[in-house]
Length: 421
Image (cartoon, rainbow, N blue to C red; front, side, top):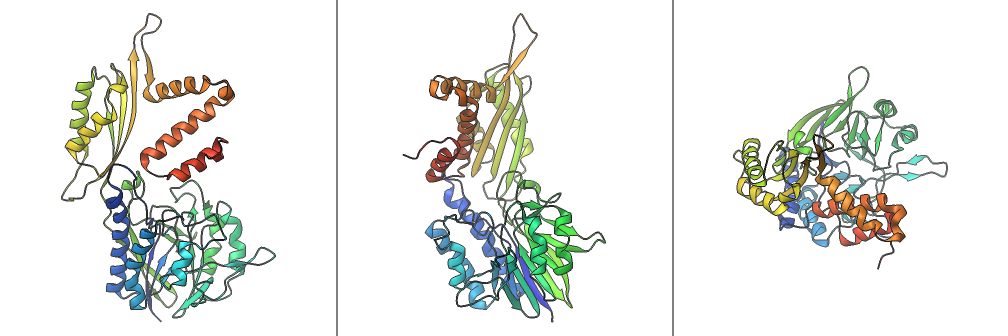
């Protein structure tokens, strides 16, 4: 029989920036994106929808995020279109005595969460999905067998033989939150192409997630078998380079025919401004303004963009003179960004009798100051490098709005051996 389905991944509901007044608008971007995919599923009258992990940005979501998710998935439930999902690394909760939000959605019938069980010998059991309990590792739609397992970490390649041994049916699809080296843009949670290749013999379609860039994985003969649609919304800076969308797939006589459907993510720009040779801060600001206008093509999109601004070059004034407030003022004049991140990598050129010139970057100055402050306490003298690196990492996370207060305390307790107060 002929089947049609949508394959998406890495939705990251709940992702936002917790400062700058853009929390609601940025969070809504991801809900809007999922709502568009749900609407397409209804219009195309697909048989099911696949979500290959990371439906949520974090395992501990806000109740309003959960309520909004239910609201968006409700039309699929009413239309009788199964939404089949697995957990990604972002969906995990670390307290296994508690029910996860993904498990709650499955028990309520909004998704079919696939998760296999394990044998005493370490093998996999893909038990039939139980609609009443909302759990299982295998379900059948039409004549297609759908198997699923979520994120299993950096050793995923070692699990492939056991996954294949556990599947004895024909006409199979695997939903798997894992990346493939040489294709995936992320550095962890991948397996080698040669490790993944046995999956091609057992599954006609391996629905991947994890990396936010779309790509296909082929057999040596050139047959596509692994499909990663990437994230449909831009999650992190750098993703402005990738196409954004999902796969619409038709299955006929055991063959999978895929089409990439583009989505409409919020505009994102990463701009590097070269200020090399600039003599004073006022001239530098004028150059920033001019280069930003030349680099940013806002087009007809009325949505406020996300902007990453990086300043580079050797200048004859102190880099601190280009403070964040002054740079934000320029950004506001040029493009009114919803959110902006600024990296000042300017180098200060100084003159001395011993050398023609020497340079010291703002990053070097920050490290030196922190090094002195930490070293002023004899208790931390042997840990200066470690604590300076930790301080700068926390600073970057806070500026990005990526972590909550509890998560910051967890980082301190884990990486700096500082007890929570």
